[in-house]
Amino acid sequence: MAFFYFVIMLLIISFEIIRRKKFKFDPLSFFNGYFIIYYILPAIINNTPFLNHKNRYYSFVGNVEASIYGLLVVTTSYLMVVSGFYFTLKLKSKWKNIRVTLKNEEKFVKLIASLFLILSLGSLLAYTSIFGGLFEVISNANSIRDQSYEGLNEENSSNAFVKRFIIAANYSTFLLAGYVVGIKRTNKTIKIIFIISLVSSIFWFLIHAGRGALILFIITLIFGSLRAKVNTDYRINLKQSELTKKVIFTVIIGFIIINYARPFFMSLSMLKYGLSAVYNAFIDYSSSGRYSITGMEDVIRVFSNNTEYKYISTEVAINVVNSGIHQMSFFGDFAGAFISVIPSSFLWFSKPSSIEYFNTIYIMGGHYTQIPPGGIAYGYYSLSILGVIIFSFITGMLGGKIEKFFNYTLSEVKFMSYIYVSTIFVWLDLFFSGEPRHFIQREFVYLFFFMMIYYGLKKVGEPNTVKS
Image (cartoon, rainbow, N blue to C red; front, side, top):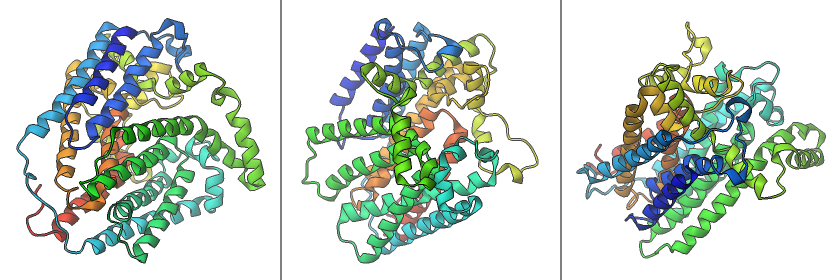
């Protein structure tokens, strides 16, 4: 089966190279990369005998061999996403030939950025005060994230609700970065707000202690700058070699963060003893156990252990649904997702179990950790193969919608380049998490931010220049 997945990977890469795009990359470009990373390569690694790889959940499920039906499900999902994407692009657009022109562009940017920066700083102050200050939170960020900090169950507490708003600084940073890099005519006020937003974003990553968010932030800055560079001056033709270098650089940085960010966050617990203690702890953590890399075998292990859970979840979902162990949920998780944002202390009933909970049970036999199913498994849990088709096609349509909207705004609204890339990753999160609850919890601040931008353009822009 590894051979067939390898062929699919080559076809996806070839398709990405030859297909026509307005720019060097679009939402489907990122989807293709994600799909290869989270589904195709793990399937190849887990089904290539000479690699002798044991998956992360081997002690629970053993070797998860790819099935022919699983291959068909994965292929169907990909084709449905592509079909939905191009189906939307070919629809007659209400945005066609529409240009957005802001009357008070600079004031608009400063207003939105300032509002979200204030929201972030206010949340940061409120959250850190709960634990006794910023220093205490950063020192214990890893244990707080693992819910081992003095018995704290942050998942269902009001603390988690406050914490989610700190990420607002990221969106302020992206908005201002598009203005600073894309337009290059900024006043001192905008630069000051940008610097404060960037520093607040750094605090967010130290407090959150998560690798994925940090990787996405860096990728957004890298590819947002490429989009801003061309968007500002259409005489600039981004060379394929330049894009390739950025992709390679991103892959290397991503791998470094995946393997070494967790030891770094763990070592911050020694912060009270000084920076030398933090450094020594980091060296100890990163050079031992699963973080130690001595050869290509370890590189494959690190990569697969951090990506294979979606492939494994897909095969497991097929087995438990087809055998009748799991009763299809008919996409009911989206209703529970909105409830999950509300702190449990404000509710008079228990929150329903998420699809992630059941997926973890099916794989590990207990809820010892959290294993998001990914979009394909989520579709299958919801409505078998029909659920995969529906969820994948709708995902593709949303991706096409994103591309069309930004195609007709980026030409005039220069500061949207970073927002464009950030929006793509929010879209990818919807599919590749396969967990509506986590998607809403992670992205509801962004969704609020995007709505303000969208309706702000309608309000501040020239009359009738933006249509929904």
